[in-house]
Amino acid sequence: ALQKKACWHLDADNPSAAVECCEAALALVPMRSSLEESESQIAATLASAQILKGQPHEALSAVRTCLRKARAVGDAVTEGRMLHAALHVHHAMGDLETAVKCAEKAEWILEPIGQTKLLLGVLRSKCKLQQFAGVSNSEMKGHALSTAKRALELAEALDVDAHAEELGFCFMQMAEVRASRDELTNALSMAERAASVFKEAGNSKQRAQVDLACADIYIRKQEFDSAGSLGYKAQQTYKEIGDLKGEASALVVLASVQIAREEYA
Image 1 (cartoon, rainbow, N blue to C red):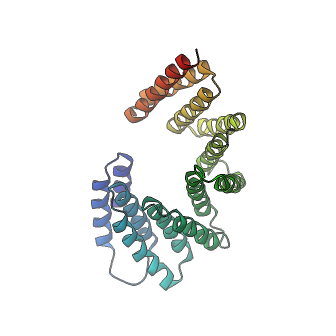
Image 2: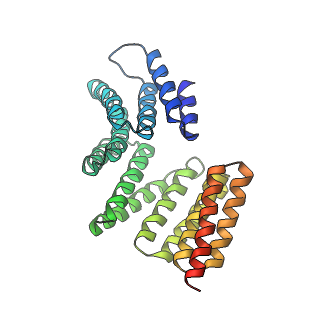
Image 3: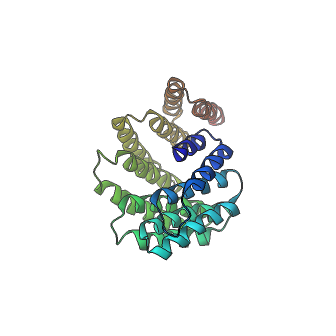
């Protein structure tokens, strides 16, 4: 219950409250050398909250404690999960090289034991790292594309009904990678497939985020009517579900459409 509450606080952009919930939950875990799945999940949530609080060193300490326990008892699943958490911590600390190494080690551990869903999360995070590094490194852009392709292949092999959102996220990531390479038509195609998946899954919020991503691509293509239509559609969706932050993002995109329209007039 405390972990769920911590996740709720994270979603509400309240990392301090999330940290308090996680620390209270960990205090309830019996002092022993063995490891329960719930403990690793709490540790990963705690690390995410501490990163948002600007406390990456504290986050790394929490992750390492759980990682040591996992290795001591030979728990490969938890080790892979905590390496994924460590990836995010090292990224927050600006150490991309170590973050990528954590991703690669997690892949090496999770793939042979058939932990496809966890592996998929690691690959998506690795791709984000490579995209970030690809801003100043063209070779890394190529690596990001390869990782995105691998993640999408894994997601397409999963049961669509049970893992629809994972597939949608992978389509969206592929769209982002293609857009970063100025392959705008391919990017739109991938984003539209993501939108279709989220629509079928009934996830209005993610569908709206895809609409905003498509609007950005249409701005780059100088197709301002399409961009404005999608921006307005996303704004209405966010308004209907009461997501003020999302609605603000949509308004920013709509303003960008107007500015770009005037610049190219």
